[in-house]
Length: 297
Image (cartoon, rainbow, N blue to C red; front, side, top):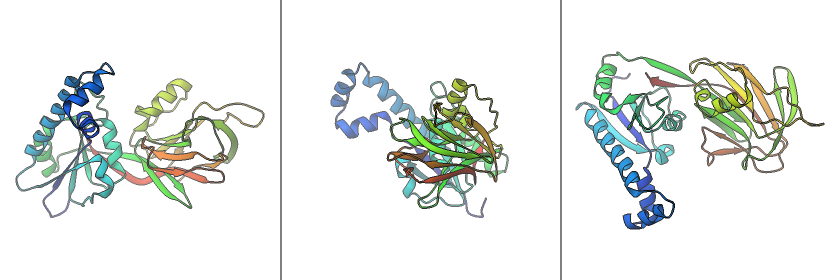
């Protein structure tokens, strides 16, 4: 904490209704669009109103001597976070992951607008509890889970950091070809891509891969360790399947050298639009990031 009064930064993403209205202009046109797809505008409006009420409740919970800002997910890359910020991620679990890479230690309150609808693995707090949470924070009475993050580095292109996972493969998810190096071993592989995950990520996309492959990985969200998982490796005369999964401790690395003519990509936390190229000859190193996400639990 700094000597300045805290600033609460509320982060949300646009609702389905807002996206529909931006595209179709009127409620009637949006209704027609949904009805053609056997969906009800009333359900979309109800979810929008639930979020609107949650935003109002969150705003009202901010103490009078604190400051407040509201930013949508789409504008995060243009928003300047300050050292004294408290970040409130109001939405689904994925919103917390979207925010993580923009922070440098600021505490994050994961808040659900609807505890009955969402999974709430990261957004564990209900919006009605925010006033009490802010009071506890002001008196130093909150617990922080320092969540491990991972990073992908390409020497010529930069880095991506992730709270959940990094994906390396082909943009169309067709077969990706690469040379994988880990623990003094190397193997040429052809697969549906590689996931490099955290313990947090093992509750999401990576969990489905471990269930499908029976990979015996156990990793807590705060463990300073990452894990790589190869999706559907193909055994052939030229490609192997021995290096299918492994734990990567802090300070260690796994690397992939691309053998994809074009269309190779690296992206983090499911944001496919923000990617590094992984075409022929590109080498990416994967490891545990120095950055952590301070999640209020």
